[in-house]
Length: 494
Image (cartoon, rainbow, N blue to C red; front, side):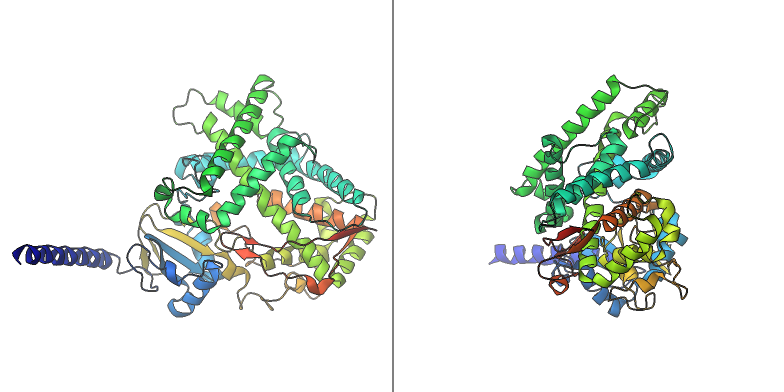
């Protein structure tokens, strides 16, 4: 009787109070961009295709327009769709949108916000500026970045030559190649493709990548505090992650023991020199932990992305043998067979350059970009986006936008060529994102893609047993990354 009645009353009161709080919250957020109705706690998760979240966002935008609010669990998220909205936020209003989420994603998390990937404010500015200039110096100085890449391309081709045209899955070889470029930059040494320690490092990087794209990884992104206490594969990867940190720390120690401050060999040396220079400055961002996590970021961000793009590139060449042949003719006429291609050759290889750009546009590797984060309330297009909102600039919608590209859904190098067959840039080419937070490794990645693809075509013709029609360019799975399908391919020496 009375007990039940009072319990019901208390419950009703609580529900009313909650509704009132919810309502007040919503009133203050009334200028939020529109979006689909969200459920408490789980938000819009049920309406989002787990296998390709970007498709759901594009669908929502047909109803709610180019700037919309979506709830990923309880995380308020504003999604920007199409070139105009993305450019306006990341380029025109760049300062408002430079925040990064303390993203707990498997790849970007556990950095305790150190490192360039997920830090904000002064730390991010200092580390990013340093990393950019260091990448540039190793592109100019002593043994330039370009030279390291050319050398690595020779090792890769020598390895392919040994296979004598028999079918192989290129995934592993391409990861070795690309990881070695990062090793050259960071440790100033490359590893043999048979080196046990190197292979272990690569295996772990691929586990981290796999976990990040799996449902468990995505749950971790949304509910990291909870997931820390639940069993699952993420704990095994945490342990492996520590193993990589150990390896990096050992390398840093080797560098400390042999450091010559007057001539830095690589990223670690340059960073150690800065640590020494700034040890009296209390606000410095140059300290040991930041060095470890920045290296970790360079490896994670610089390996899987570029090697997946190269793997996709080979699939494209096999699917379109005519394109492959036209590139080979162009390359033969410019570099011949003997000389390793250099970045200088880009101006003389407009068709090849256009194909490489189209490969990146079509693959659409990072459809959701890396999420940004509002560090305070900002106004954008008449809406108010409150502090602590995740911002997703939907790069997918820029790279595949109807009004930006003649044939957005099909592979077409003409997107990057003018009527005279000269290379033409497109403002909507944003595979590396745009603005102040664009990919720090952009110039490195472009260099790798160009030199590796061109030098491979000098020496080999690519095909596969099932013929061009057996190749599917639609990703094998999508979540954080669009991961291309794997194939056994043949590299026939020319």
